[in-house]
Amino acid sequence: MLLTSATVDIRVRQQGGKWTAPSSYGYINEAELQQILFDQPSLIEGVSSRAIAVRELTMSVGRADVVMIDTDGTITIVECKLAAGPDIRRTIVGQVLDYAARLAELTPTVFAEHWQRRGGQPLDQFFDGQPEESRRAFEANLEAGVFTLVLAVDSINTDLRRIVRYLNMHTSAGMRLLAIELRRAEHGGTEILVPTVYGSESADEKDARGGAGVGTRWTPADVDPWLRERDVELADAVIAFTEDLARSGLRIQGGGAGAHPSFSIWGTAASGVEIAPFSVYCGSPASLSCNFQWTSGAGETALSRFLDDLVAAGAPLKPEVIRDATYKRRPGIPLDLLKDPARRSAIAAATQRLTQGAPTG
Image (cartoon, rainbow, N blue to C red; front, top):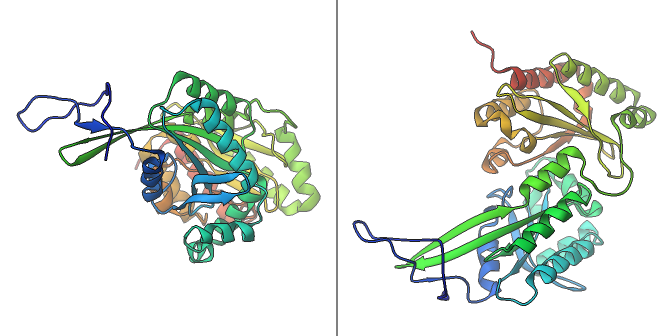
């Protein structure tokens, strides 16, 4: 089943025996690598165990190796390549970008038809029982071409790492590019998989700081007039919310390069680490992104309490999905929630606990 080859940085032993190299390692072909990710999408960083997937999703330019949809509406496109293949760094990057461009041209209905033709779970069934925001997020991501693109390889090289970092730093926040190295070995009937992810740091940096992409750079000052033109009550609620947070030492910063104005809310966690717990995104509908992924420096205990506090405040979040993804999530909730003074105050109080620590009794 597996190929034997040269060196690997894995050693195994029976109890009391000597450390030896595995009897075999690697993949016979790319299909084996595809199958592993299809069987367990959560091997990809940020993808939960509840995500669904199909293999070989057909488009006009070919077939995307694996496409995944998560319960929060995120879409992940995976292209698999083995290092032995010729010119891997250019072919894998070009293919996944081409597939993403073609996928963004599909309507949700046409996408669902392609999905079911590949044996995927019907999307109506998948989103049944999920908050309505999940289905809307999926459709909005598809329409806007907001995808996580994953280059899955058996061995990554310096050139591919360089390309991943460059694209993350010079594209808009709508595209998140990761490379995952899945080193595989077998010994005595036991399979060993060593996943290593590259690119998450540069993707997070781009998202949090606004990246270095081209196009309109929004500023925080652009958000209020955009909201006020459409919903004065909502604009006033957002100002009241940011003023509440400012009293706890948080600040408005940055602005993305998307189709609509946005800003993020930054502060310092009780641990002393810089965090960005929220982003405000204008659009239809406007949303408040709960940035657990950008708040990881607060520590898991503080994040867990923050999540519980937000749910108690009425935020329509899915705690089990967020925890299952080890908080590497940025779920959006309706910005309209801030119109309710009680909910707005509770969300601000949750953020204050995140930055100042739990109250002592």
